[in-house]
Length: 106
Image (cartoon, rainbow, N blue to C red; front, top):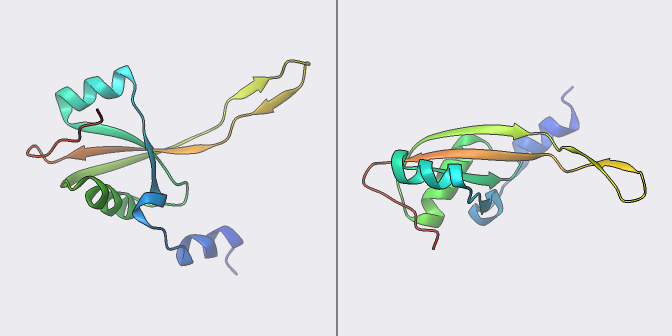
């Protein structure tokens, strides 16, 4: 019998704007965008590589060559009154575009 998370992944229909949550604009990401035509995005945790590729192509009108993903675990943090907690887990997508296409953030 499948677990609840397996059923959710199969039946989940996400729109492109629900899959790509935000671009990650960092120094490393800006360097990779200029030199390797690779862009970083925070994406929905249940989205797969095919869904991410289709969402980026739809939202930015570009041709995607490759998608790589990373599941990032939330860091442990300490509160002001001595309490402990964790930040949320999130998923990162590294999207390499065709050499003819670019994404402009600004």
